[in-house]
Length: 285
Image 1 (tube, rainbow, N blue to C red):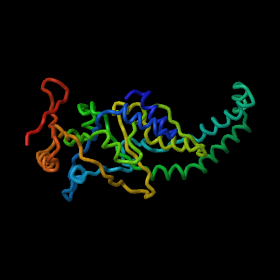
Image 2: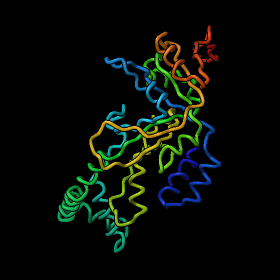
Image 3: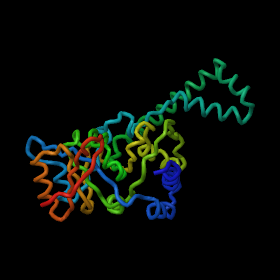
Image 4: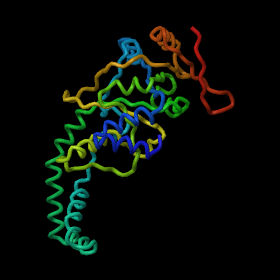
């Protein structure tokens, strides 16, 4: 999705613009989304993927288990925030050159340091609570179905499975809906929580990642849950529209997926000879 449209989603969310969100969900979303699974069997023989398909559930995970250490972490530079606040106050009374000179003055620098210490003391606990109370699950746009990188990173080196869901099915899995991830190299977190829209803006930090992840074209379902420190929990979701087996999926996994997906089309990924590209074909039962 274009950056401009992603920003529209985030702005509508920040401003609690329900009409705007409904319009975006109706007009600006892909027809379906995909989710990659490792398909691994646990030592007791259970399989998270098969359980999800059989029980029509979606797992919301603690972001502490995600592969990006910056993901859903509130990583505030309090010194920089204190300096920005101080510069804003000074600029109301002095021009930029004088404001910058004053910020270099030892007495002002000490005051800015005290502001930074205060901001950290006031906000660190709340930030930690937010981090521990957020649970999320991640989807990608359908054209990433043919991405070898995505299969390698998120589907057990092509031995796993990719599941395709109708977008409305995903959007209805949470009362908060599904929105696209915004990719940026600028970390922004607002410390003034007296404004409700700023609280929402801070929540959207959990839908923001560095630009180097942009190829994932990610959409997320996320909820805040007061039961802290869980690894995750299930929410109901309707059946998928299709399931794709990785080109290195085991015969056991294929057989079990076939059994769990009685009325769902199943496709087998394959490597196109003479190329570095993937394709897929419908499995016969």
